[in-house]
Length: 441
Image 1 (cartoon, rainbow, N blue to C red):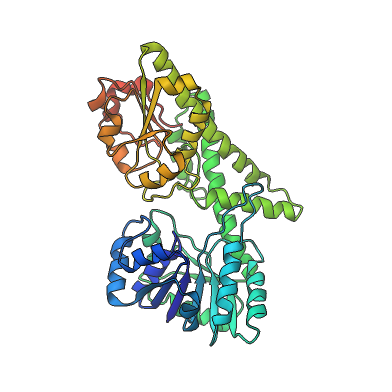
Image 2 (image 1 turned 45 degrees about the vertical axis):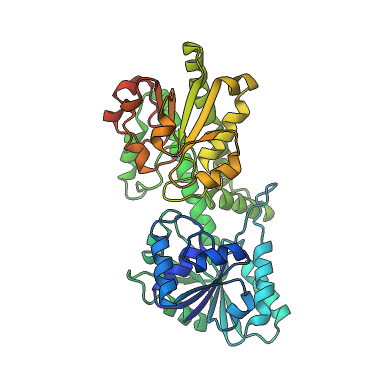
């Protein structure tokens, strides 16, 4: 099958490599010529475990190609997949569809034989109707079906999730489109249920799923606050809750709040759509508000600890930040809790604080992207060891395994506190910091 994917980001690129691995002929299109040149040379433009190997393998086989010429790539396609960004409006959270609309206007005249146009981007309910109308306007004789094909790839695990999906959701009532989608996924190594629903339902499922998971994270963080006041251990509470099959143990990890490209954007978009319909999604709204407050609270905790050590020691305090990506396994810093906590911390600090406190940071993959956001407001180190050398406080903000494996006792000559906001650290590695550690927020 011939597949054209428009967009080579965190959805489009892993999907393109995955479909090529399943035996399809794939062309990935992007208007960023520099990116296309790199990808054509086998140079990955984002980090995902296993992606580079998959990219090079399918480039070599000829199954995977890259192009900036959208009309040519669309002409021979059986399925065109839209995987462009739908960023939130900063004022109200509404999903911005300008990239979707621009791509559809460009692809419409290039449609020749029957083609399925699939929306993999997360889009508001009713976007499929808009896409249909645009195609009919710019190519009245086109033979096509517009379907909703939401993605459920977890960043950091996108390659694994592509080949091992929990489910495949397809929004369409067209029998012809259903047959094409079944052929698209027939070579998956894991037998997976394909759920066909109407297009509005499919467009809603992604938002509803992400909002629910975000609420689950916000809930366990609120329970963590409760545990701190009562003396309960939130990790034990979460484990006990997770043993209930109705609840499950996933997304019950207390921490600094959720972030990334999906949960913040999708909760805000869902809330906006609801308010447009005269509805109040109180749980979603509380989750959005509580998540922002969580990051402010985490920044305040770090600040209070830094100030106390500064006052007690009367020396310039070195604060080491371990982690900048929004989660492990990716270099994505979009709405990263680590980055937002640092921004909140910098806002709290006075000019005098900035002269008496040094903030340095390390992340295995996200340093280049984080630098474009945080600029020179902090310093960046090339290793865990360099970041921790001479540090007075270590703060874990991203759940990379290497941070949990770090022996903090090796830095006990200066290190006075380890603030583990991800509950990674092994107790045996924190012997000298037991009374000063924050675990199980």
